[in-house]
Length: 424
Ligand code: ATP
Ligand code: MG
Image 1 (cartoon, helix red, strand yellow):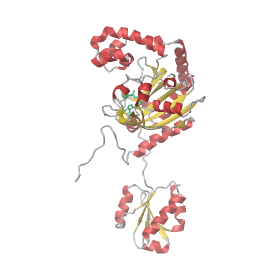
Image 2 (cartoon, helix red, strand yellow; image 1 turned 30 degrees about the vertical axis):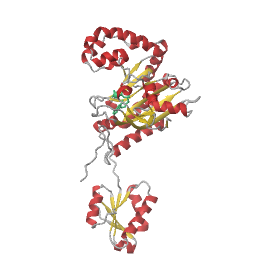
Image 3 (spheres, rainbow, N blue to C red; image 1 turned 60 degrees about the vertical axis):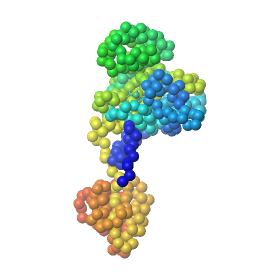
Image 4 (tube, rainbow, N blue to C red; image 1 turned 120 degrees about the vertical axis):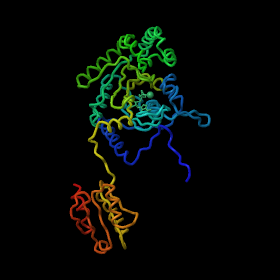
């Protein structure tokens, strides 16, 4: 036998038994977004590397070590590690946001060269939302309310909680940065080499360090909220009171800064404790400077992305009421002279007349007993049986595979009505 070839580490297949759950989750996402009037967009999976470097920031984890980058002749390309950069690129290039507000969403694979573990993969999937041209905190609130509705629809709302912060304007953050660096410089003895490097390149990232000793010290560090500019403070106050009034619970987490450079004002994460270390299922925030930074007219933006693998894992973990979808309702077994053609014709008629019914014809020969076994394994509700006498008499046998009721023979012309009765 030839040597088998394996999938790339951290890149998953989705088996026929897993896809129904994925489709169920994706449908909930689509339906909730549709109910808020958001429009789907689709962007390429590959973009030019400088797009991500400019949008996400050179010193972020994503750009500095997680990107899949390659040369295509003399152009450097990258498999998208997230969706915002490509969406903003497209929005500028295609004129989607020219004098126009937009509420957009997308869903698809993202790629990051990380150490694979539960909830963390090298190819993973995100559903993301980007809203352009609306400065008011109302829209930040709408995005959070929308995600809260989605968690209910997925049956996971009791298992996620909202962390909220404001990181203010670029200027406020620069002021805060200096204060934080001054504070942290006194505690360098507690820092790893990587943290010392961050202290120089991206000190805010130290706030979400996993280093326990440093975490303790950080409790006394200057707080970003105390450095907010007036406008950001007012924006955040309004957002919080809207969420309060709408009954959305949240925790203000002053250490929440998020990993990507482009955020300002609002940042938020929905987290769960049910998935171990990979607890963030959804993260987002405002990025008012990004469109201009990528060469467009100054246009505010706010958005979020959720990790579908983590959502699917969480649904599996906590929601036992997800309906198990099966592939086949009616299985057609047949044998004898003229039966194949008759079975095909009946199947096509059923698919035309009852488009929601899932009909499978056996196709692989053998005794009736073997064919029934197959129908049973697929958990079909009914088998339709066509033998030589049914072909001659233009009848068909309906056998209920679930209830064990007596099978009945009906004229082929009455079959659609008979099945309609049983599936209504
Ligand atoms: P983390 O802190 O877990 O690395 P992140 O801050 O890098 O997350 P974002 O860039 O904000 O993640 O992406 C939004 C969401 O996408 C995350 O909250 C998570 O649910 C999901 N996600 C990110 N990276 C991965 C990955 N490697 N595998 C699976 N899901 C991921
Ligand atoms: Mg990450």
